[in-house]
Length: 45
Image 1: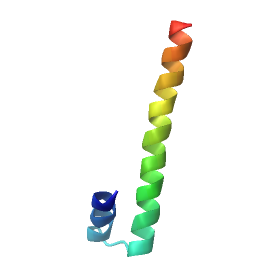
Image 2: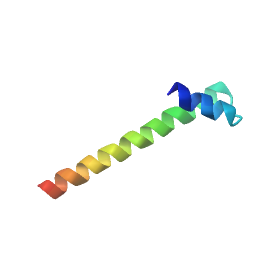
Image 3: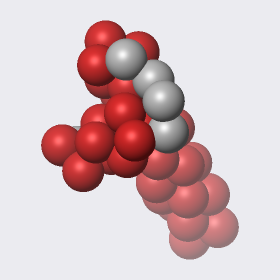
């Protein structure tokens, strides 16, 4: 997470906005992981 925040800061965002973007990014990744799990569960029955 710290690396993502530092990356966003290096792109010109302030610290607060970089933190928010990192949180959103992590949430999207987590949702993608869960949707794959749901798809697998449906396929396997």
